[in-house]
Amino acid sequence: MKLAIILNSTDKVLIASRYKYTKLLRYIYGEDMQIFDEREFQKAKIWKPDYCIVFGSFRNTFKLPLQQGIPYILCDHDIISLYRSGEKHNEFRKIRGAKKIIFTSPDHQLYIIKQYGIPADKTMVLYLRHSKDDIDFEPMKKIPGKNLVYIGGLLDNSFANHMDGKFSYRCYTDIFKTIISNGWNVHLYAARKRPEIYTKIGCIYHPRFEEGKDLFRELSQYTAGLQGFANNNASFNYAKTCRPNKIWNYLAAGIPTIGINPGNGINIYERKWGCELKNLDEINSLDFSNLDLNRYRQMEIIENQAEELKRFIES
Image (cartoon, rainbow, N blue to C red; front, side):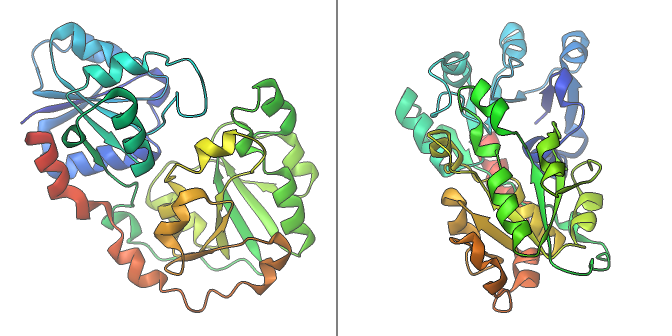
């Protein structure tokens, strides 16, 4: 079977689901899987795949295989209509037109099944676990003191209000202020924007790393990683349904995860490689000694779902 992954122009740097899913598909299919951007795929008339893999959210790459009569598998990591927007933004078309759909979260899977009447056997959940060869590195020396790291999207409150609060779960100002007041340093690896407010309150920005071994090694120097959201308004209802990439990225780095308003993702790692912090002022009372990071770091690899994914695609 031949697969073509179609990326749009903003996806040149493979991160999160695009990095992890692409790597797993290469592990399964080898050279029978090829990656194209939109323009390359339109020109690639000779190499015709059995299936195309396209990603969801605001992307419209699903239209390309439709134009050529090729079935596509949708990787819908981010559900636009789920609490975030009344507008479906081509959601109905891309979901109903998909041969099959892969989700990063069981909550997203269930929502789409109910929302659009999709047969459950057309869907599967593929968690954003790390790859086994991405954890083959020597960890860095720990930075002295108590150091919390966060990787992902960041906004300040003024931008969140401008966006009608749809993304206000990314506003961590108050959370980081409290953590810093308790004697911790906060290190940030921003996905895109680097709002000035975070340096003003004492956070430390670092250069962005591409997904994979180098990032995980970089994260290994910190005390713990933050997985969670600002619980500001209804946008948190969306955020809590996610199983975000960082749940496994901190584990890949070999550091415990601290969950602050972690949503349903806490059920994956609680008392395994992380714990929930319900009162920020009790951060210094956290005890990581009962966690078994090394065990779960070796167990929680994305290759565990390789056979399941292959059967799903080819059935």
